[in-house]
Image 1: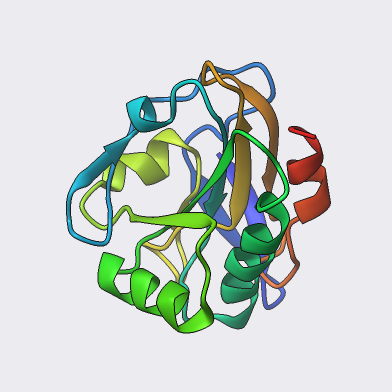
Image 2 (image 1 turned 45 degrees about the horizontal axis):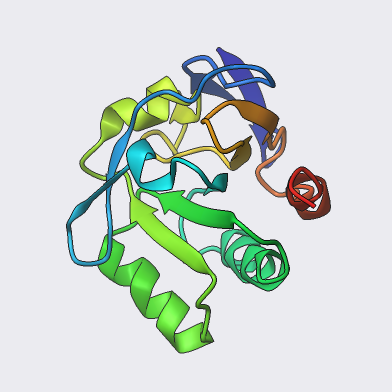
Amino acid sequence: MNTIQFQQQSISVLGDFLKKGDKARKFELLTDNLSPITNDNFMGKNVILNIFLSIDTQLCANSVREFNRLVARVPNTEVLCISIDTPFAMVRFCEMEGLDYVTTASCFRSPSFQFDYGVQLSDSILEGFTARAVVCLNTVGVVVHSELAHDLAAPIDYQKAIQCFK
């Protein structure tokens, strides 16, 4: 279990956050048309899991925009933007913003994802949401970089995540 900060309060984050060298845990999330998307969809590709609270928060929305901009120049690399938001809300956001280099996925039907990836917020007003994090997986699903935001109001280091695959 980890602890992060939000508005000068500590929040517990349940599960074991993945670290460099760990094998990605199996997951099944939902795409914009409610079809499943799993780890298997990305085998043979580098993947950046951009995990966040909600597309309706400025910092989280900015992370989707920034990864869309950065990954456009990185071959064989995909960004999977994951939150508890409905798939419809995330695809609407991406369409309105013209973002076409990221894939969105919802974990609203997969509560085990939050715990399995060590991003499940607990013991606060934000209980049930996911912490902000990035997990970079190589072509065989091994973690090559991970970062858990220690303060929900601070951005992730996007450049460090992208550099894993340049």
